[in-house]
Picture 1 (cartoon, rainbow over the protein chains, first blue to last red):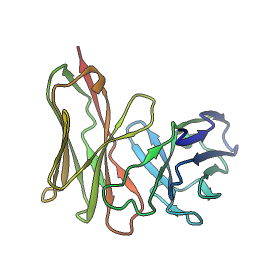
Picture 2: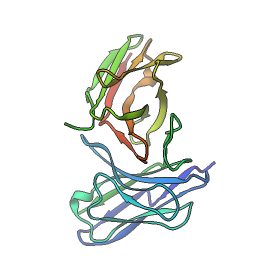
Picture 3: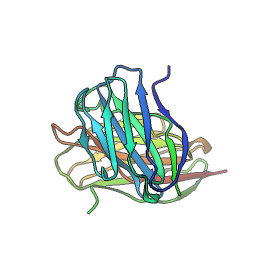
Length: 117
Length: 111
């Protein structure tokens, strides 16, 4: 079972370049999330999509855009990369739109390590 | 005050020891609580949900204290394989569609 698949796994960019991180899940989940993880900062939510056709900002959305292409795919775009966006990016999904009750388990992809020079 | 706070550690404990982690949350409307485990350079994975009455899964016990707004994770008889970073996660209120994570507590179990 593939679960949540992220591409690319590694990327090096120069300041000002753009790129898109791709995420796809094969679990028929409704909600999808993009987090970034930095040393000493923990996981911080960038954007999320509670269901197909909706997206909302999380804690640190500046410098990013997202697209919920369909139920399976949720992409994260950096339009003009900055060194401060050097991080590990995780995509996650959940079968529900509202993380109701104790079914709030997020299934994470393996992460995408991005370095901006 | 951060929404979810954890002691970053590291906690270095010998095999067989008992270790406890705490996690405090600021929003009293928070409803659901979880502990995740993250191995080095890997993705987080759910360790256990935290029930209101507390719950146990083998050597792991999770507790919730709503009055003091914290959750705890107790690991008994620590194994080398328990070495990881433990993240608490909190979901706040109805209509909220996200989990907020603590920064994680790093545990190293030493032979």
